[in-house]
Image (tube, rainbow, N blue to C red; front, side):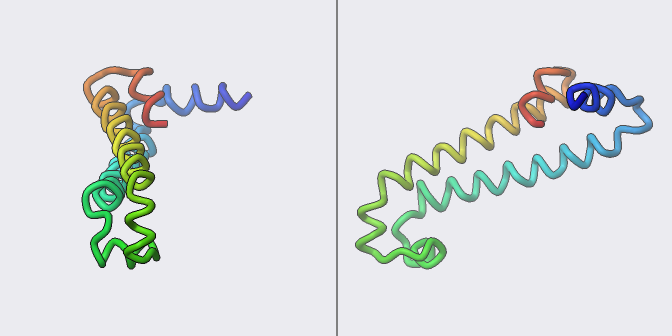
Length: 102
């Protein structure tokens, strides 16, 4: 039943695609947030401002550097998957783009 509801939603006529465009907009915003988190965890890790944001001391930041680097790239790949899904949806990828974004 739930799959049927999703099918009906994604096969709406062109004049009722407002919800799909809003979902795409919010997916784009979320992908930018993931890229920002990548920056914080993989590039800016250890700086005083980043340490304050994550609530860690300099010693803890050095200990957690490998974990943060890994977690940052995880967030980057999530953002890339969302952006790929949006690109496929925009350029006619259809089901493939919807599966990556939704």
